[in-house]
Amino acid sequence: MKQGKKQIVFFCASIPQIFLYKIAKEFKQRGYETILLAVSNEERFDKDFFKPVFDKILFSKFQFSKPYINNPEYILKRLPSLIRFLVFMKKVKPYAIIGLAGAKWQIKLAHKYFFKKYPFIYFPYDISSEYYGSKEIALKNGQRKFEIESEKYCFEKLDGIIHKGAPDELKYLPGRIFEKIDFAPLQLNFFPYCSDEFIIPFNRNKLSKHDKEIHIVYIGGFYYGESMQRIQKFLKEIAKQKIHMHMYLYNRHISESKDREQINTAFKDFINTKYFHLHETMNARDIITEISKYDFGFFPGYDTDQLNIEPGLCTGNKLSTLIEAGLPFICENSIKFMGRIMKHYGIGIFYNEKTIRTLRKRIRKLDYKRMRENLEKARKDFNIKKHFSRLEHFTEKVVEKKNKNK
Image (cartoon, rainbow, N blue to C red; front, side, top):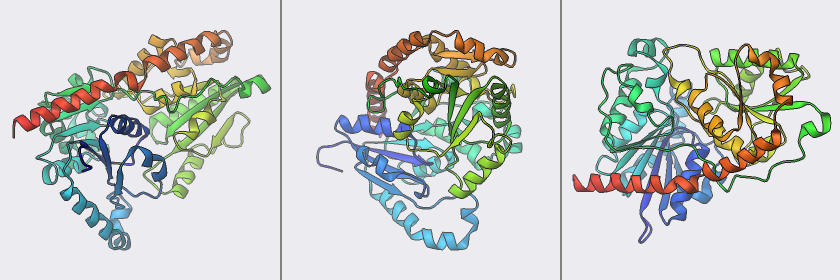
């Protein structure tokens, strides 16, 4: 630990996200020492991008998912890096740890065997108990028992909980995968806010200014399932209306070549058409300037399974990224809570299976100048600097309670 500095350790059981960058930067600017421990490969992670906000970054360089864990050559080659990673975890003496999932079982093990005596805050990025109505359904859909049990452990045994969805989302979790969850009493709702560092001037040189056509952009992860099918339906419908869709996709859990192969397969019916444009993904800073030339950001509909409550409760990095880029939203009605945020600021246009057929007409009638003014308000209000003191005070409360109970 640097002399006189409180050390915040981020234990990340996945590839680090831009939201983590923003949080770490605010801690560092307030005089904390920041350390990132990531249980993952680093080949597809832009380490240089994260360096300015961390005093130290250490990767396990070892991934426990398939096909890696079934490859003896991979294990032998990467095992020394994993051992160094674990040794460092034993030596570090943090002021507080924030565990970001990712793999909940890794957060559980880190807490039990490395950081149990230190204040440990659980920050679930996605909550399995929102996706599945029962443990049987979760197991049937590929969730493993130890991972399911680890989520309950993290909610109950860690010293505090940060969650990024709707403020009341935790109350909907008991009675689903688990009949009862005794949540850690200290909890904080903290959204993926905008950052002044990433906000750019409004782009007035849009593609639409030159070709007089409408351009929509989608950025984010690539996933199979009903969500992808709904995106495909959306693409077919807007192509009829001569609206362009630009897509920047990634899947950080597989190799880059396999990633591209899967994306090409999923969109094979659109790739060579006039109104579909598949682009290479970019880092979190460059993507903002890149997408600012389009007219709208896009939030597709989610699965219609009534037992999946996640669409009605979630938020995501796309929300702040599109605001930072100065783009209003086109959003499917099933996006309930994020839709409420968009409606609050007046920065969204919503559709369902019927109204999508008149999307072009509705867009042409929009007061785009007014939406830009609303985005300016959102940038000021939905800003991490305005809200970060809540996170810092929450961390202090967790530390105080933990130390009091020692």
